[in-house]
View (cartoon, rainbow, N blue to C red):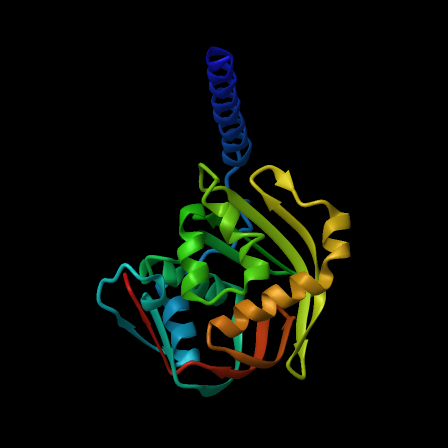
Amino acid sequence: MKKHLKQHKTLYIILGVIIVLVIGVVLAVTSPKNLGVGYTKADLNNVNKKLGITYASLPSSNDPASSIKISGSKPISEQITQSEMTALLNQPSKQWKNYPVSNVQFKINDDGSVEMTGKIMAKKFNAYSEATNMPDKYKSLIADKASLVPVNPSFDYKGNFEIKNGKLEGEMTELKVGSLGVPKDWTDNNKDFITGFVEDRINSAGMKVQSATFTGGKLNIDGTVPESISFEK
């Protein structure tokens, strides 16, 4: 009997390893989709000047909650280009050890929809979720499972969103992780969940957005941003 159980246990371990390897291959076979949007040092300087946020460094710590500090609030009313957005979204990857994405491209289409691609740094998601106080209902869906992913997969997102009077409106129309696409019926049936997640992530960055639209290849934004953000590198 013991020998029989041991054989079954060994089989389960082997099957588990095979499943993890298969998932890893499926997620790893794709690179981030090239949206044709790059950025220069001038783009990064321009967007930082528009936002006016001061950045600083934090001492080393083993506590994710101590790896980021957001302070103050200041008004903003600006137009930000897609190249400036791309520069801004990549900037924390060099500033913060728990930033969970890299190689980001952000594109604003003529119809007002937006696309974003990049790489998910899966092993950083748990620390990121703790540092930014991600609610359990989102954490259980994303962060708690990210540590099981054996690779850093690419992602490809497309959606139509705007913010009116502080309320996010619109929908996610496409999401792929590696070569795996999220079923359309799932996104259709979970619009409120997705909207809540996006709003929560905006708030976690210390932002309060009154209005935001995407027109003419630019983000038109009114609201408030932090005065300063400090990161543990």
